[in-house]
Image (cartoon, rainbow over all chains, first blue to last red):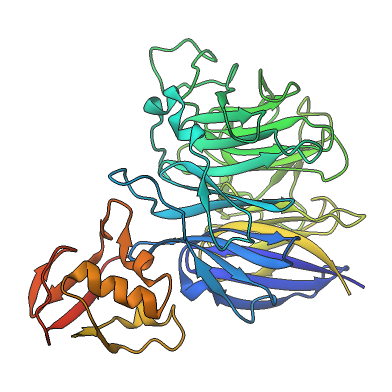
Length: 356
Length: 87
C-alpha cells in the first residue's frame, strides 16, 4: 500500500511525517539534523535516502543524509566550498536530485552537484562566473540559490532561482548560463523601466509544470513562461496581493498551480484569513481555497519552499507556516486539515510516495 | 601533543568523539588537521575555505585567543569554543 512521506524542514531541524494514502493520520518524528536550521528536505530516489540542506552559524553548510527514513544520519560538505579568499559558503538552501546527480544551492548564491549520493560535491562554477553576478544582491533572506529545476527529458537543461538576482538557465549541463528575466518587474530598482532589467529580480520560487511551463512567485508578482523562461507574462491579476513566497504545480495536469499570497507589508496572509489560491488555466484566473483553514486572526506566512504537492491519483497539497503548523489537503486544496502544530518555523515541505 | 577540549555541539556531530582528546600538531591548523584524521569532516565544521576559522568559532591556546597560525607548544591546552549566539 502506498505511504506518503512528508519531509519538513524547519529552523530547528528536519521532521519526517508519514501517512497511508488516505492522508488522514500522520506520524511525526524529529527533530533530526542536530536541530540545525534546515532549509530544504528532499528524497533521493537513486539512493532511497532523505537529504537535508542545512547550515549552522557555527559549523557551516552540510548536506545531511538518512538511508533509513530518519533512523540514522550522516553529514558532509566535502567540496562544498568556493575558491580560497572568496566569501565562504555558510549554508545549503536547496536540493534537487535528478537522475544520478544531486544539485544543491547555497548561500552566498552558488550551485554545487554531487554524483555520489551527496557525500562529495563539486562547484558548478560557470554560474558565479557569469559577468552579471556582480549585480547580485541579497534579499531579506540573504543571497541564496533557493530553487533548482531540471528538465526531466533533457537533464542538460536546467533553471535556477537566486534572491535577488533572478532566474538563470543552462542548456549545456551547467557549462554556461544566461539570465532569463525578461518581463519580470523590479519595482524596487527606481531607475529601471519595469520588466527590462537583465538581472536583479527578486524571485521567490520557481517551478515547472508537466507541459514544461515555468511558474514563478516573485517579490513583484506571479509570472508564467511558455518559452523556457526567455520571456515572462505576469499572471498576478485576480490575486489579493502580488507578494508571496512559494508556488507549486500539479505533477501531471498542465497549467494548474497554487500560490499563497501574503500582504506585502506584514508578510502574512491578507486580512488574517488563511487561504491558498489555485489556477487551472495557467494563471488567467484564480480561485481562493479556504475550507478547513483558520478564517480569523490567522496571521500566517509560508516561506519559499513550504508549499508542495504529492503524486497520488488525487493529488495532495501541503504547506507549512512560520508559526510551526503543517496543513494537508487530500483534494488539491479544496479542503484542509492541520496535521502538525507547534513545530519550529517551517522552511520547506516535500513529499514522496513510497510503495509497501 | 596538545590536549584539545571540544564543545559538545561539535562532538555530537561525530559519534564517538570525546570532549577531550590528545592530538599532535605545532600550530592550530595542524591540530585541526589531526582532528580531521580522527573524525573526517571535522575540519570543515571548524574552518571555511578562506581559509580561516569559521566566523563564530574561537580557539584559545594556553588561554590566549589565536587563529589558524597560532603556535601550539607541546602539552598546551587548546580550547575550541563556539560563540554564544543565535536563537
